[in-house]
Image (cartoon, rainbow, N blue to C red; front, side, top):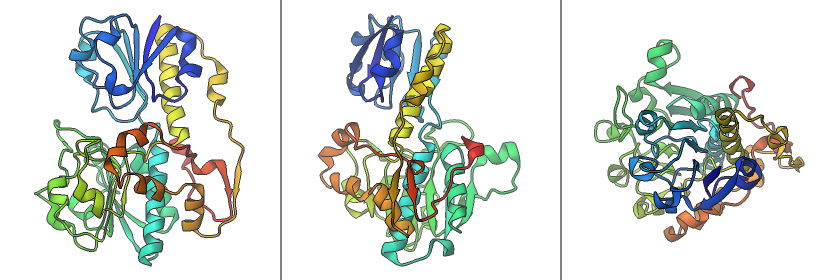
Length: 350
């Protein structure tokens, strides 16, 4: 068996070599010709998996080790009996921690208390649920907007998008979709951008294309946090220069998230070929706990990991893709012993 794996997949050799021969390429360089003698394909977000890529190959299993799905033509895979598994939710806690870190820095630099602010969370799935849980522990008022969930669960606990956009801080955590009953492309666009004021803090750590950047670059806000962009890596220079934080789509790039993405696909591949799991794989991350002595949220989180470094790197936009592919090691909060009581995980969501 031969596996083609994006070379940015975490631990690809340790985790997947037991299945057969492993060959790797950067995700953007994986093409049909490179797959002609491969049986399995494991990607991240930079490979467009569709008919053009797979037609005429013998690929029988596709695994995507990231949370998003907009690079996968699931309909084509289904019609051609190609098994597919994704790692949705693998980086949810990492993204929630990124947003809380941004809020802690904003509160410090703009001299406000988080407990006095409202947070509009648009998209309350894997990331939004965790962010809601953490923000409430910091005393924030959350306004939750998620029409698909509201349709299934009822209106209690949810608000309209107009209501959510009225919050002091608005953050997006939806998938990018163009069709269906609730498309999210330009979810914040010409129809409602007038609800964003000069006092709004606006965050996109979801997908490029959810916020209309052509309008966004003309709007005066209190601050913008932008991790996800249209046309990556050729991002909007006006927004990049004006943002409080502009980072190269790395909110979910913790070591924990990368491991979980690989591990989730490993489990599904074991099921697919009916192979017992290797119990040692689950313990690949065994980091010794580190002690942080700082006594404030701001100082504690910046001691754990300073996203300001990520922002500074892409002041030169040409470094976007290389930095993302060679991202520094970043571990999630539970690896650290802290003096400040950080927001906890909701164990019911993990």
